[in-house]
Image (cartoon, rainbow over all chains, first blue to last red; front, side, top):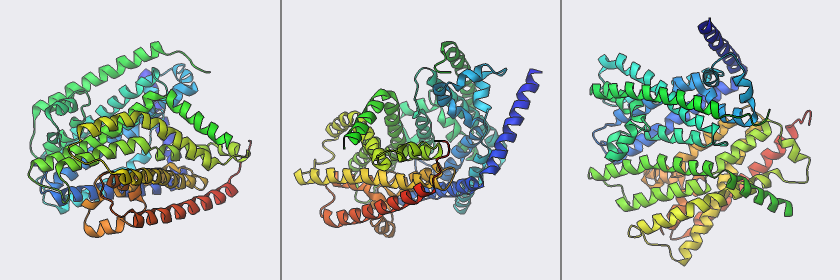
Length: 263
Length: 263
């Protein structure tokens, strides 16, 4: 019964979002344009880097392009499903959160899934197609037999970003007007576009533990390059469990701490 | 004039109130740019060298990119605020009063820049002291040119994002235009890669565009690489006039089109 309520909720929110998506047709073209623009800039940056160096710590131009594609893929699904969590800050400040906690649904679940953004899927094509074209126009050493494992790791990376984002945004319960906390996530996404080997050891440890973005970019790409490290894959599973636990515990603590501000 | 000085004071109060938010934006800029710094460190470690830049110079360049972006880079925030005001109809409140909305927004941006500077200046002093052997401080004339270029950068930052945000008078989601401006600017203002590292034809083309004045030109002025500022200032003033006229034209046409129903 409870499960049915949650699945009905998800299907209804998706229907609403798809209707909204088609209501703003100009938005479709803008996203298409943005994705293409984004990919052109990414390609320009990669070209410029390799204009000055033949390889980056053993990573070729096509490897870096693959890294750009992977970090984007690791973001897209969670952006489609849980983009509504971005609104948590305004829900708390405007008092809408009072309304959320009275609903017969888990408040964390509601905040994460109440407004999916299927329009983000446009970026899947508009961003990745030009990059993929560039990837295949350069010599690369992709091991296609590992593609299924790569896909699984990218899906896991999506869950990891979702959890990291939830943990960070939950801090809005204690500090209001933390609009720029999203910028931290964007900066981490920027860092994920570089091979971890270019960073000093201490930063590499941070990138595999506290802000484990290496699992969402470098690890899947290494698999596709044929360098499978089972230790890192196990590490990803452990990090996922830890972040899921932190996200849940922090949310519960936040709810206990929450007191209505306005309505 | 008193009403505008009150606006400026109010914006200072607002930004002082949310210090943590400003701290987060500073951290995010530093995190984003650290990737680029380590990337070029890795390139230099492999024995490659960038034309015209020693390792220390490239490090100084990126430190200044971080400081300038954190200090004066609030243009997108201003743009998003204008988009919200237009979309939510708040703009009509300003239109009914003897008060220039665009001047108000510019002063609001200046307020945020002043507060950012409180955070950025101590970091700049520390950075300059740590890297004092990597560059020579500008001469008295150099300082004058640097301060003028920073002031010009603030004007460009405002004009570009204000123009992008006025698209909200015609489209539902003007925020896309802000994102597009962020993307285009990031490539052409020298914040990702110094413009003189682009191929010669691209560098020549970019030296006639307005984007260079936001980041690249102030840094070049500080590093003493601008020997004859007159042609550069001429291009800057020309672009400022053009952008100002475009802003005024869009504002007039947009206001004519606005309907303030229910206000």
